[in-house]
Amino acid sequence: MIFLAHRGLWKRHEERNTLPALQNALAAGFGIETDVRDACGNLVIAHDPPGASAPALDELLAMLKTSAVESTIALNIKADGLHSQLRSLLKMHSVQSYFCFDMSIPQAVAYAREGVRFFTRESEVEPVPALYAEASGIWMDMFQSDWATPSRINEHIRSGKEVALTSPELHGRPYQPFWDVLRDSNLACLPRLMLCTDHAESAREFFS
Image 1 (cartoon, one colour):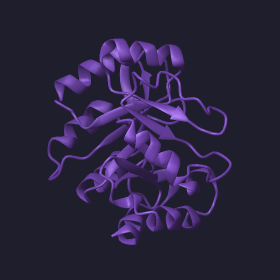
Image 2: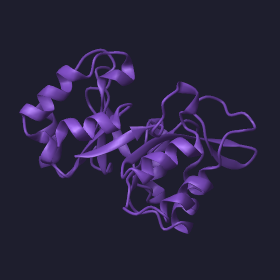
Image 3: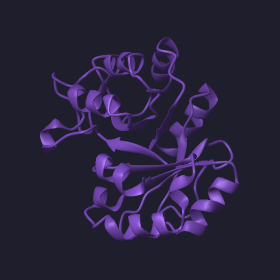
Image 4: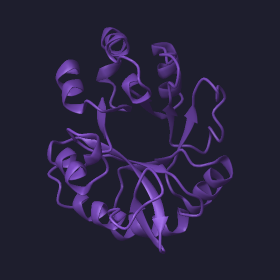
């Protein structure tokens, strides 16, 4: 299992999506999930509309080259029309282990046409993932309950898809019951499975 550190490795909420938090995650050998928007013609890291201090995505992608291991980067797309510029940045920095997600369906079509790797989303409100055939993987989002069963996860993996799971604490629920299910089902040994979590260090220890 690949652990995606949600907005980096941080101790305080204000540290999320900062370059130090993201660099800490990379240095610890984790993948990362972060948010991408545009500001003044540049792509920046920001969950909400960005201020002047938002880090440049270019800086993060440059850091990937200096990592001791190849880390997966999950880019949560927060604005429309970023696909061409994002494709150019990824190519410039030779980033291979990445995926984009959470864009609108029309935007997902554009990402597919540009050849940018993207995951489609499955959730309680999106039981049929859009553009399933075109997507490289599935972002299984659990807004209200731990609905992502081992059988459903395995179904996607047997279909040749990578799978990224949102750990329940990202939506304000206890994570331990879902982690227990994953461990007891032996899913954690699957290399095509990812877990996006605020507690990447605890997850790595729990599933080891």
